[in-house]
Image 1 (cartoon, one colour):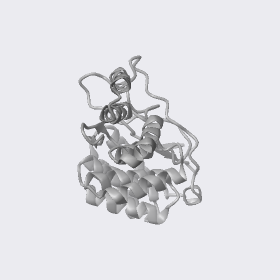
Image 2 (cartoon, one colour):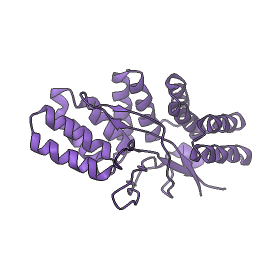
Image 3 (cartoon, helix red, strand yellow):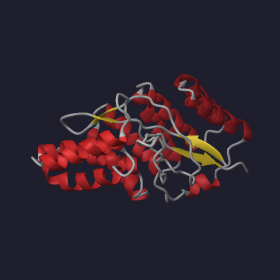
Image 4 (spheres, helix red, strand yellow):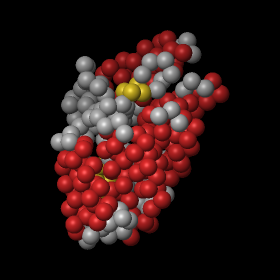
Length: 252
């Protein structure tokens, strides 16, 4: 098996329970194919969070066999991404696509690299291409939702986050995004709490979003408890690292 990674980065912001994002180091994992939700966060013990599992694998991804040269370019992209060199990572994923135009994971990873450097319109285009090839992969939808939020296309982002959860109910990034989108809508706050509580199992930023939601409702004691959970799970003075997800390819 070979690892394939995508990234999502969130820092929950004040007010609307939304988030600011920045490029972060990614982690590695040997998970089921198409698994996105590996949260690269440090617990007080220093051990990484355990990601949820159970995402189904689309038929498209099971059947696709990238040529060796395309796979090699893809893996070089991962190594550049590991080193934080997002531009070179993007170039390698683009090379993988040129060698194999049906390589949905490469389109998805190219979109993630564009997101890492703030090129959200280009990221959205790549996620759409990935979804054209493979509409049944949850994390393409949640990554698209992320980039749509960054350019304030919130209704579209909500649709994509819901689509992601329809395909994989364990997609923590989609739970977090949907919870943040709904947190300021009174008629949706109960649902927002449910989504954020699920995401909080593996993601400190969700605790902060919950604290803000409860504070807005006047539930100061519960808000304080969520804030304490957030502080316990986050490294002081560092940006939150979340959802540096991965999937991996079979060597066939």
